[in-house]
Length: 114
Image (cartoon, rainbow, N blue to C red; front, side, top):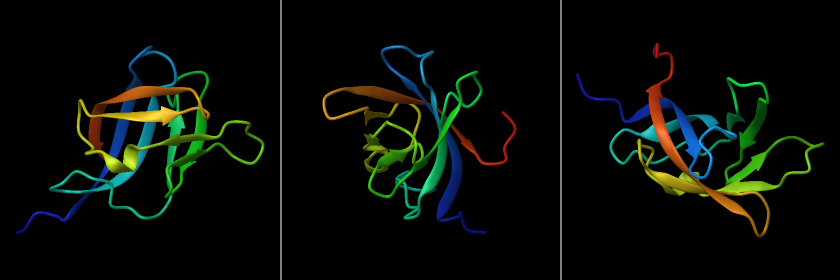
């Protein structure tokens, strides 16, 4: 039996400056070998999914994090350009001048018990 060409995973990434502030959770489809995002569609995620300040968003194909029509935020990320594995880092731009570096701390198969 051959290995699947892709994996559906849940990713947890923490902001390097404050690992308790705005953890990001995303559900992604990645290539099984390169570990790169292969889903060309938009995907769902959330800031602080398990905490008291949960803010869901859609990760757009262009890297925009869309918090909805009423949100003032215009975040964007380069997550789609990095390998999805523990220890990998990517940036989140909160506006034109401010950004933070996030580190992937967990990658789990969707549906797996943690």
